[in-house]
Structure formats: C-alpha cells, structure tokens
Length: 149
Image (spheres, rainbow, N blue to C red):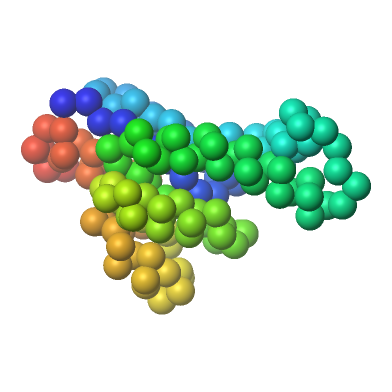
C-alpha cells in the first residue's frame, strides 16, 4: 500500500523535513504547498501582472495557490495540518476543514498550548499529534501495522 500524504500548515520550522526523513523507509509520497514564503506571496502578480493595492496582490496569490492546494488535498490519502506557535495559520484551518469535507484522513499537529483554540479543528481529525515523530509512527502503523519500538 502506498500513501499520498499532503503536509499543510506553517512554513517556519522543519517539521515537514522531520516527517519526510522519519518516513523515508515507508511507501509514502509527500506533497505540500509552496513553502518559499516570497514565491507563495508573489506568484499571482508574477504570473498575472502587478497590482497597485496590496489586497489585490495578496488575492491573486491566494487564488493561484488555491489551485495547487486543492489539487494536493484532493489527491491525498492522508492530510497532515501543522499549526505552529509563531504565526496564525488561517490557511491551515481552511486546509483542515476542506480536507475533512473531502473525507480525507486528517492528522492535526500542534503543541499543547493550542489544544483549546483548535478544539473544533481537532474534533474533525482522526488523530492529533504534538510531535512530527508521532505522525511518522501513525504512518508506519497504517502501512505496516507495527507499533513503535
């Protein structure tokens, strides 16, 4: 069995790399949004033309990014959504809700400080992890039926 895993959410830490490295021996393929912050912010105007107002600049970028995000979420078997400590990840909340609406297996990843604020998001998930290593162990269990050693 091969799993397609979409890694969504905050882009300011190495959590994606931790999961991909930890799952290197598993039959898993990974996808994610563009994690180059500047490229993600500027893709709309770089492709479709400049905007005078920041709102329309951001709007164009969000719309172009949504094409990639929707495709990645739709094709995924498992969606992991990370909520970090430093910034509010409104896009991550959207991705979690969209993945849940698509019936995707959803894993939410955040620290204990966000448990109350994300209780409704957590309720839509099949698992809530606090560390990337826990996500790896969930993927390992799903693919092999093996518990952590």
